[in-house]
Amino acid sequence: GAVVSQHPSWVICKSGTSVKIECRSLDFQATTMFWYRQFPKQSLMLMATSNEGSKATYEQGVEKDKFLINHASLTLSTLTVTSAHPEDSSFYICSARDPLGWGAKGEAFFGQGTRLTVV
Amino acid sequence: GQQLNQSPQSMFIQEGEDVSMNCTSSSIFNTWLWYKQDPGEGPVLLIALYKAGELTSNGRLTAQFGITRKDSFLNISASIPSDVGIYFCAGLTSGTYKYIFGTGTRLKVLA
Image 1 (cartoon, helix red, strand yellow):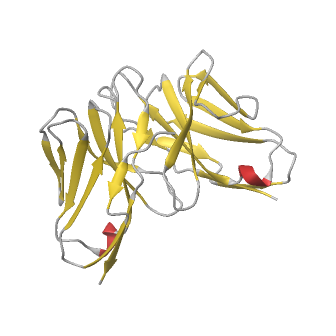
Image 2 (tube, rainbow over the protein chains, first blue to last red):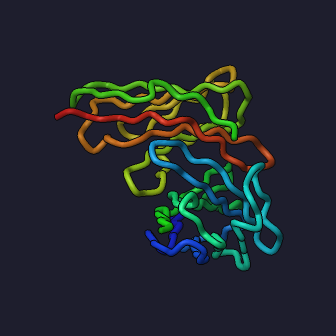
């Protein structure tokens, strides 16, 4: 149990276009999902907390108009990088917790990540 | 953003050796977790610790929740080549369920 799937695994896009990344909890309902960004050889930096049915909470310094998050159902959250630029190239990872089962004590489970390259 | 300090930053060890790494914070956490990340993949949960002083094992891995609640340790016994990867600690404060990640320990095992 506790499987989180991200799609796509990698994407290359042209500068100025928008890219959508999906995060799905496959065997549990995730009331809360988290989006992280990871630069090479660095740690994970939390971008935002996505709550089902309500607006995402963004960390300081993260542009909410740049990184649109939608958590429309208990099993799906999406991150859209709008008007992407080369500096947005990074590894984006989502995580999810199920407060009623896996994650009842706070554990979150991660997707496999999405490598975004903006050219 | 805030990060936890992990040490060592990287280590090269011989297969069969034991490994120790730690994570320290200036803040108190209610839960400590240890994850392993392989290149190009998301982190995988190894061990979760829920109360100060707790010592928990998962196979060859043993982790402890520091008494002060500001640190945690991870030990790997009899390392094998597949232990290669980056190990991250993560602290969790109650209420927000927001993780603060450590800076990572990069482990390389020499056969």
